[in-house]
Amino acid sequence: MRKRGSPSELGIEKIGKLLIQYSVPAIIATAAASLYNIIDRIFIGQGVGPLAISGLALTFPLMNITAAFGSMVGIGASTMVSIRLGQHDRQGATQILGNAVMLNIILGLIVGIATLVFLDPILFALGASNHTLPYAKEFMQVILLGNVFTHLYYGLNNIMRASGYPGKAMTTTLITVAINLVLAPIFIFVFKWGIRGAALATVCAQIIGSGFTVLHFTKIDSFVHFLPGYMKIKKRIVEDIISVGMSNFLMLLCASLVASIVNLRLRKFGGDFAIGAFGIINSIGSLVVMIVIGFTQGMQPIVGYNFGARQIFRVIGTYKLTLIAGIGVTCFGFLMAEIFPGLISSAFTTNSELIDLASTGMRMNLLMFPVVGFQVVTSNFFQSIGKVKISIFLSLSRQVFFLIPALMILPQFLGLNGVWLGAPVADFSSALLTFIVLWRQMKMLKLSCPV
View 1 (spheres, rainbow, N blue to C red):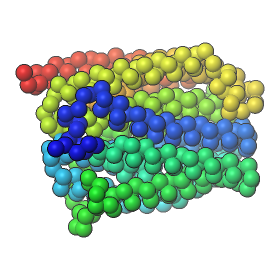
View 2 (cartoon, one colour):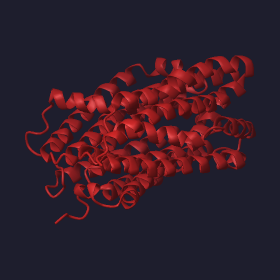
View 3 (spheres, rainbow, N blue to C red):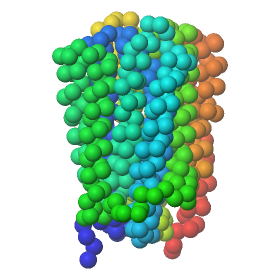
C-alpha cells in the first residue's frame, strides 16, 4: 500500500492536486520570507532613515553572491534527490543529502570569511558612497558572520521539501520568519541597534531555522535521513550537485553583476536616493517573483520524480499548470505596481523625494512584468528535468544578453528613465528567446512520450 505523503504519490496522484499540495507550502514559505524582507526594510526606513534604505539596497548584489553558493548546493541537491527517488534509489538520495551538508558548511565558511576580509572595497565597487557605506557595512558584517547557517538552512529546507515534506519545510520557514519579525523591531526600535539590529535578527532566525532542518534529518522515520558513512564527500556526487545547481548559481551571480551595474548607473544619473528607490522596487518585484518561484519549487519534485520514472505526459502536464499560475501571479503584480506605486512606496519612507523616485521607477521598471512568470517557470522547468545547459542559457539570457547592454545604452539617451526601462526591454527579449527554445524542446519531449 502506498503511504500517504511518500514520494511515490508523485507518480500516481492527480497533477493538479499534487501541484497545490507541494506549491502552497512553498509559496507560503517563499512569500513569507520575501514579505519579511519588505517589512524589515520598512522598519529600517522608518526607524533609521532614507539613506539606510539606500545602504541596504547596496547589499543586494553582495547578498546574491553569497547566496549563489548556497542556492547552487540546495537546488542542485534537492533536484538530484527528487530524481533518485523517482528511480527508487533511496541510498543514492541519502548520499546526496550527506554531501550537501558538507558542501554547505565548507562553502559557507570560505565565502563568508573571504567576503568579510574585502568588504569595504567590494561595497565601494558596488556603488557605495561615503554616506551609504556605513549602513551597508554594518548590515553585511553581521550577515556574513552567520553565512554557514544561512547556507545550511536554505539547502536542507529545499531537500526536505523535495523528499516528501513540503508542509514541514513551510512550517520551518514560517517559524524562521516569525522569529525575524519579532526580533527586528526589538533590536531596531527598543535596543536602538539600527541596521545592525535588523541583520542580527535575520541571523538569529536562520540559526534556529537551520537547527530545525538538521533535527528533521536526524530522525530515522524521515524518508531520507542522515546515516553513518554517508557524510563523506564524493567527487561524483559533488559534480552532479554542482552541475544541476549551476543554473541557479550563475543566475544569482549574474543578478549580482546586474544589480551592481544598476546601482552604479543609478548613482550616476540619480544619486543615492535613486539607489534607495531601486531597493523599494526590487523588494516589491522580488515578492511577486518569489511567489512564482514557490510554484516552481512545488513543480520541481513532481517533474523530477516523473522525469526519472519516464512519465513524460505528467511532466508536461505539470509544467503547463505551473505556467498558468506563474503568469497569473506576475500579471497581478504588474497591475498593483501600475495602479498603486505611490501607496506602496510611502510604506517604506516618509521622504517625498524618495517616494516620487520609487513611484516613477516602479511603473517603468515593471512595465513588462507579466512575461517574467513565463520566463521563470520555463527556466526552472528545464532545470527540474536535468537539462542544465538549457536552463543556464535561459537564466543568463535576460541578464547578460539583454539587460546589461540595455543598462549601458539607454541611460546615455534617456538618463535615469533609461535605467528604469532596461528591465522591461530585457524581460520582453528574454521571454521571446525562451519561447523559441521551449517550442523546440517540447517537440522533443512529446516524441519521447509513451503512447
